Image 1 (cartoon, rainbow, N blue to C red):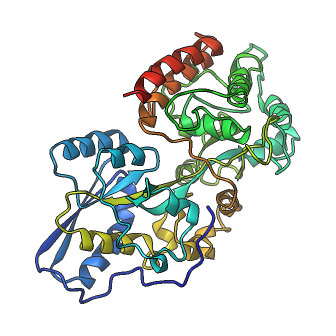
Image 2 (image 1 turned 135 degrees about the vertical axis):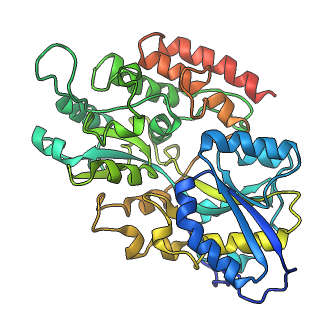
Length: 423
């Protein structure tokens, strides 16, 4: 994400702010682990504001969004809650998010990644503010590469280079046609697929994001990815991995490479331990890529104020505290990149003494042309966090499992997706 460089304003609420005593501020998160880390920062906010209590709750995304939607329907949204780049447009359109434009000054924007901050601006209203941002990366097992005599991913890698490496890293020791280890692992998941599509100049949507109109570059990328399973055999069918979480396949040594979000750095560290060395790389540019159409895939995790909050000023002060200079590098787990530049560029966050030793690659990705591909009702047509659905996730899994052609899947996806986009 490009950075905004303006004189730095105070981002942490100071003690003594005029505020009614015995005020409860409600805060809701989609990450229970992250909330545990944030308890110290929340306590510091409460200490700086006598009489203020922050009532914080967290639940995983599969429960968070239905619960938040129910609260929105009943007019009982939290004062502050996590907001996704993928959902912010529809939540803003529904009138659920308070416009912070009048309280966020240029000085307060200083020191934050511009790209991350811009995601929360919808129709000239700032309805969310970034806490961190993330980007999918190519995870790879260094030990497997060395054992196969293959060079690890390089910045100038082509898709042919990637495919050749994946072939060399797919091992069928007993020759029975079923590989013991694969060169790659992928599902129809957005964080598996879109990095390749966008790095090839692909786009799913028309110019005004009202309809699915996959361009040739997108179709070519999808063909390349599905061929990894159905033609080249360098990645397993998703159904072969039932019972194994997709984010665990590469860390468990079942595949040498895998593309997913940088937040999985934490999980990969936990599972791999000291079993093998591993690193991250950017997804290679595709054969159709040009300087004008190629884009990195990255997006911000943000905080919003509920439109009906009784404490909007206090809520904004809390957001400033939770995203700014009052935080520590250790508050941002794994590959979650702090939106606040001074923390993101600190040695404490870069963690060069841990795997991956090149975590700073994420900052390089953020400095590039970034595209999210998110639209209104994105979660519906994309089939977010689902498998076997009629959304894009499910359609691509049908192709990867050998039950459908890519052409038929795209046709079904466009019909289904455009119906959702028209609502």
